[in-house]
Image (cartoon, rainbow, N blue to C red):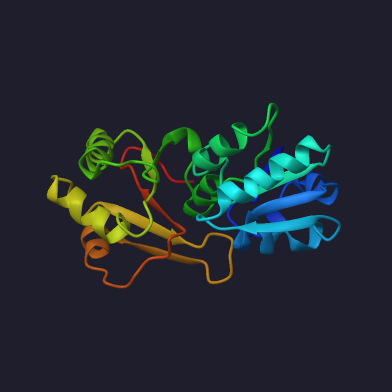
Length: 223
């Protein structure tokens, strides 16, 4: 099987290699929102949407098609080695060989939009963390260290920017710490919010589950 990541969501950010894999595939599977992004390159394939509830069944079907010699592509959002760990594990259980085709990274877009260099930054993802206390402790540690900018991927729904801001302030980080929140990078309705931790903590509106926070280090010069 081949796994193609479409990146943040703009179809123009799909790599040429990913597009070629989709165009020659016999079967393409993935969540419906992802398949919608790549629809113009899957017209020659059987397309099977999946949900969290039936993804095992859809991947079992894909495994059967591969055993018959069919070319199968699994599509996913984002960065293959950041948010797709569980999906990759499910695919690898069903295929002896798995080719990974990454898309353009949302992390790179966050750097480009905020004017920071990746080598001056630290990336932390909360997507698969289970203990909130350890999540916050890690963020607080590096904010106190202050050596690098922090690019933080919140955990949708239960640990989002306002909650994170409140918790790191409670852990002793200065409320005046500058922070930027990007929502829906590269997609229609993309938004950027700039302010302090205190201002972020006071936001009552819901953030998009496609959000990235950037905490700026006072010891790094912005581009």
